[in-house]
Length: 431
Image (cartoon, rainbow, N blue to C red; front, side, top):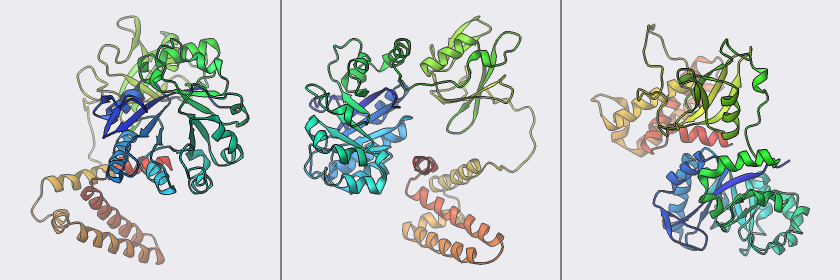
C-alpha cells in the first residue's frame, strides 16, 4: 500500500531556482541550499525540473551539475525531470544521484522509449509526467508494466476517473497557495498519493504540522512508525530512557540525553529529536533555540529495551560548548592502529588531499600530482593489471598487497579529479 507523501519542487533555470514551471522569478541563487532547507523541513522527496532550453546542451550540462549538488545536499530521494529525450538523458539524471527520473509523455518520442529505459534501469526508477489524462489512458498497459509512478504537472482539469485503474501512485503539482489545508487533497482525491508544487514549497515550515494532522484524521501518511511503544521500553528510576545520539553519516557519537513518553512520541510524530530536560524539568526540542536541530534517520533499542540509539542528521553542532560532539575530553588512551575501514580510508585520503595542497619534498604522492593526470591514469592501469595477475595466484597475501596499491593510486586519482569517498559511497548506496 502506498503511503501519502509531501514533495517539494525545485525548478532550475539559468543555474538558479525559479518560482515554478511557468514563472521564471528567481527565488534562490543556490538551489543546493534550497534542497537542504526542504529536506530538513520534513518533506518526503524533492522533484527537480530542468527548465534549460531544449537544444542548449551547455545549459543542460550545467543543470545536471547542479542536480548532482542537490542530490548531495538532500537527505530525501530526488526525482529528476526535464530535458529527457532519449535513454542517455535518463542515465545522466540517475548518475547525477537522482533516485528516479521522469519521462514527459507530452513530449514526442518519450512514449516510445519507455520500455527501453525501464528494461535498462528498472521500472521503480521511471516516473511518468503528464499534463492530460488522455496520454495516461492511451498508454495504460505500457505504464503499468514499465513505470513506477505518475506526476501530474497540471492538476486543474485532471480527469480523475481514469487514474484509479492505473494502480500507481499519482503526485500532483498544486500551485494554488490559497488552499489552507492542502493535506485534504488526499481525502478529496483518493488517486492522489503525493502533493507537490507551490502549495508545499511555500509551506515547508508547516509540513510537520500537516503530517501530525494527517495522523490525527486517519490519513495514512509517510512517517516514522514505531515497532515499540514507550510502554514496551524499560525505564530508569525517573521513568525515562537514555538516548545515545550518533551522526548517521560518520557514526560519530554526538551526545547522551533522555526521553520520557511525551518526548518519545513527539520525536516520532515530528521527525525532530525531542528530549526531556531533567535540569529544567521540561520537554526539549533539540535546536529549538540554537537552530542546531537533529533530524531522525533511525531509532534502535538495545537488547534489554532500556537504551535507544538514535542516528540523526545533525545541523550545526551537538554540544552547547560549540564542539560538534559532546565527547571530546580524553581521559586515557592506548597507542593503537585504526581498524575501522571507513576511518582508515578517510585518513589515507586526507593525507593524499593534504599533499596536493601542501606538497612535501620527496613525496611519491606529490611526484604523481606533479606528473599529472596521464601519469596517474597509467599507474592506476598498471596496478589494476597487477591486481588481476595476483588474483590468479594461490594465497591471499599478494592480492591484498596489490589491492592496497590499487586503492592508493585510485585515491590519488580521486583527489586529482575532486571526487570524494562520500560521493562514491552515496552512489553505491543508491545501487
